[in-house]
Length: 167
Image (cartoon, rainbow, N blue to C red; front, side, top):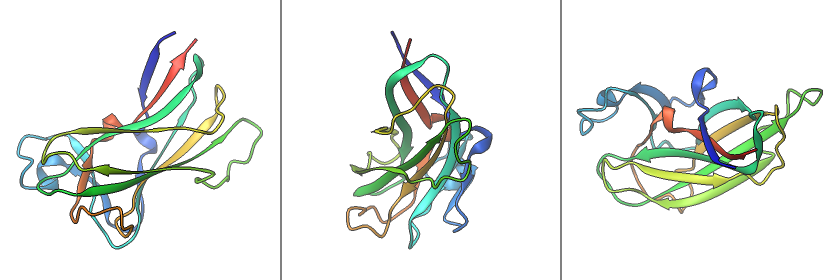
């Protein structure tokens, strides 16, 4: 048995409609990021909850220990960020219109040193099965009192992953 990580952002990655979550080159996201030419997802510290949606199928070799994770950073400040991961899993024959948010995992995380990547993970508590379609909302909650970083954060989209134990 091994621990496997698969990227889950892909073509299903969609920012919310607030305008406070968007995808841009790292060099455009903030002046401090002069060498990050990759596309990044910016959570722009808006006045409301900000979210990024993605989806994936549970792999055939999945046996357990499901985790969602991502790398993120911030350009200059100090403080905490309130992250939430909301998810819904559905198998063939189940509702295609189930609300994302059947399961919610929150955490308040101290921001990394400016411009350093920090990996954050959330254990999935729902029961998943091979071939389930899992829809995920990765959310930042700037209005929450626990979110004290008064600026944008940047998530590397290729770092958003599903981790699991295989057969």
